[in-house]
Length: 164
Image (tube, rainbow, N blue to C red; front, side, top):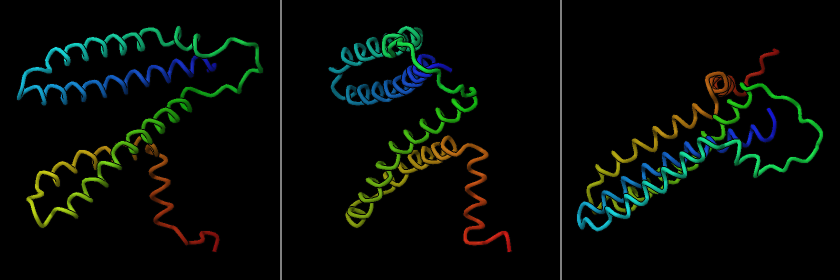
């Protein structure tokens, strides 16, 4: 896989991420506009512009990659299999999801710790379920089936010398 193709894969992964973030943003805008109704035109503009950007990134990743990567004659890079690229992409997505979920968990736990005596925290505790599920999915993406199995066996046998 060439550098241009790898960049095109990265552009498509970014388009997926951007689409997911746009959906979350639309929900946020519409939830605030339910009380006043004044944000609906902004939500529509947000949806249209966001959809155009996401579709453009998805349809034309190679054209964008050719603009980003200079076409100078260089030494050919070692060829990696598509499985390797898939594993690297999944690990990067997992790290990204993990880095987004962990601050939410820490913030909610701190909020529960500081204000649990004054108010009812059942909604906040229920709200922790989604970030914990994100951490589970991120762990699965980072380690995959084989990597997670290796991590489990390493933790189980930590400190044990198998050569004795």
